[in-house]
Image 1 (spheres, one colour):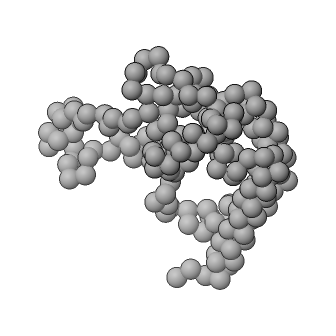
Image 2 (spheres, one colour):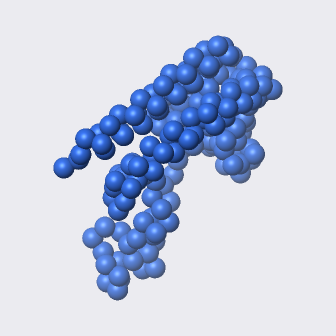
Amino acid sequence: MVDQADIQHLLELRTGLRRFLRWSEQQAQTAGLTPAQHQLLLAIRGHPDPAGPTVGEIADYLVLRHHSAVGLIDRAAVAGLVIRNPDPTNNSAVRVTLTEAGMAKLDTLAEAHLQELAHLAPTMRTLWRELEEADRDARHPAARPTSKIASAPPRGSSPGTGSDSSSKQRRPRSRRG
């Protein structure tokens, strides 16, 4: 049974997150962007490959379907915020990078967001710590897999049965970019 203190901490955390998200949406609109465009610019600039993310990677970052990411990228390209570039190693993939205008808008927003997060950090850190302590051993189902979990044998197999990755190679999942 979840106690009242845990429920109150959850409420405080969710309220803080929602207020930050609302503030972030207002900042994007003030900068002349939709909140989705702001997230798109952040996904592109935050991607580790300097060639930019593929459309599929952008869809993953923004938790969108591929066709929805394409539409968002189309509108951002028309607004002069992003450019599509052919992937030099994969003819079927397209990579997306920021224009100077997109970079300038994101830099302005990122600076304001970092300042706001620095302001919120002590409160959010305290709430997060209290929630972690309340549920120390449980792993949230939405958390990204760790390397230990990702390297576990496929479901239904056990070590030493011949069903591990050394006897059966999985084909990598193909993603259209």
